[in-house]
Image 1 (tube, rainbow, N blue to C red):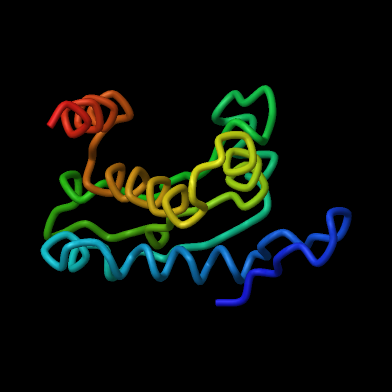
Image 2 (spheres, rainbow, N blue to C red; image 1 turned 120 degrees about the vertical axis):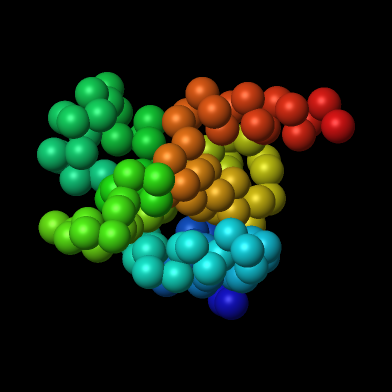
Length: 141
């Protein structure tokens, strides 16, 4: 992957949409196969920001508040006779992710992987509260 690094203190090119997509693919490859097999039909899309409809729907004060979003029907709600209206998608929002990365100093690959796994959790039907609890339990180990 080619992320441009600073040549001089005032010259730096941030990771592009394609760079973040590459990171997301690499992160997806690290997910255990027993989970990854349930994500095979999910499209991962990287955009700079959520669209205006999503901003209104999520009641965002700023588009920088949302790092990622799962759009679709959670696995637990699908049945044999379920006919999808649209495909399941995970959106990763580049500009908010890059802002978070710069503010926290965390490794960008770690940030992208964390957001991706969080949105995969929604695909599995987990709420934000469920995932927060799971993360806190994992930190206690």
